[in-house]
Length: 294
Image (cartoon, rainbow, N blue to C red; front, side):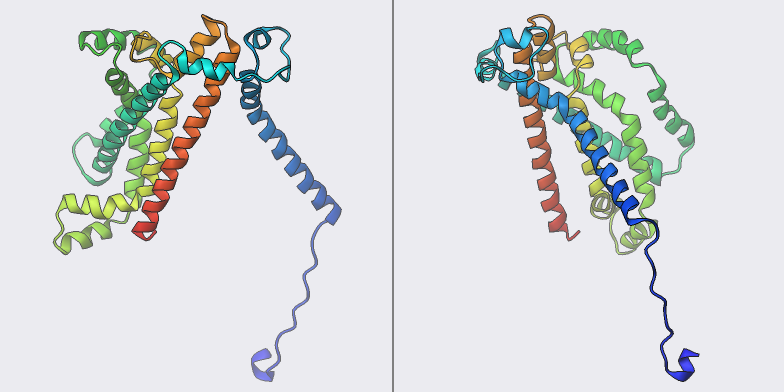
């Protein structure tokens, strides 16, 4: 034995299994498939980028051309001066998204904490009723919601629309936060309570720091979802002045005005702003995590 003789046990070198040529071929196919999928997903954005540099006549002609005959930035110049200007529509989209994110995070965090940590009669039934909202056909309640917003004087209002969007985003958010709170060991709360911390202090300084990445994910998902919303905004606000967002304007350019180039230019600006806002948020979240020692 190795322990008695002092010799190390001899190990046979492991031979690579499989044919190297077959493994290389599989790797090549895998990377080729990834490139094809990436191109397929990026094609609409590339198509919009090319159309944004075409003139109105060239962008609307059929069959469409792949590349512009001559590069023109007239579409981007028109965005700044068209009607109220793209700055107003971007501001409305950002304000609506922020209102929805703030409302969703507050309600979902508190609701998830209540379902995860408190015991009360009918908790399972209430949680099931919250998830049942997902099974309600969205189109069937748009008209009742429009009438309710009218009685509350919230039609053509970003606040009223934000309340509607928060309501429909509650089931997923509460479900996500309840499971996240349940994953945090109760011993952390008990230790904080033994040290003299109040329940609110335990919630703020013990539980919330543990769920920072989950809350950040919820914020990003809600922001993107609201920023790209079209049907709710178009139907519940009626496209009134002061409440138009960029998604409604893109639809207007494509249908009423039939200006594909202008719609493509606004779509590119929308994509750039959205990506920039997300990068800024993720950068701020990264700094907050480093400051917290995570």
